Image (cartoon, rainbow, N blue to C red; front, side, top):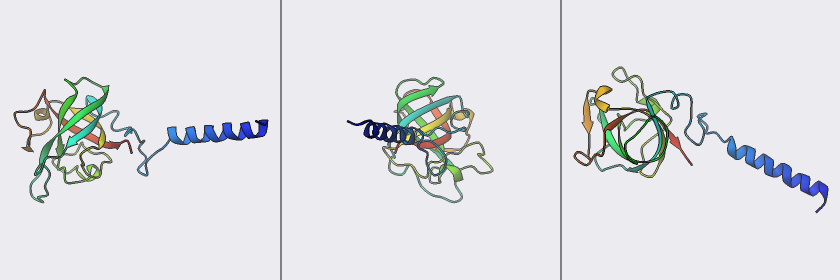
Length: 161
């Protein structure tokens, strides 16, 4: 193989690796879901897969603000501690995109997640227990099945693809 061709292949490989490692979404967050908010908010930070969205857990009612509990399989703990590899997380007004969810009642939440879909991977900043951070209606289709405490989602970003 001649030197010119080897140099071209090496440069192309370096360019591809650079593009893949620095890939960002249109909203500025990385494909890992990392941003300045998710890494500094809350006392716990995890990347987890949304196991399911139970039927009736997310609904739109203009005059009713609520949190719904969703089940996650934890893939990585970035900071803080959790109990086990399955957690149950409360999301405020889950029918709204996370960037649109904050309101006069619950101000300190957000993220880039547009909607909740089973199988998605989310990077989340969490607080625990939920009762210390939200006093309102909670839809919990897992009542009695929870393992450990209920977490409160402060920041939720889409991670992965």
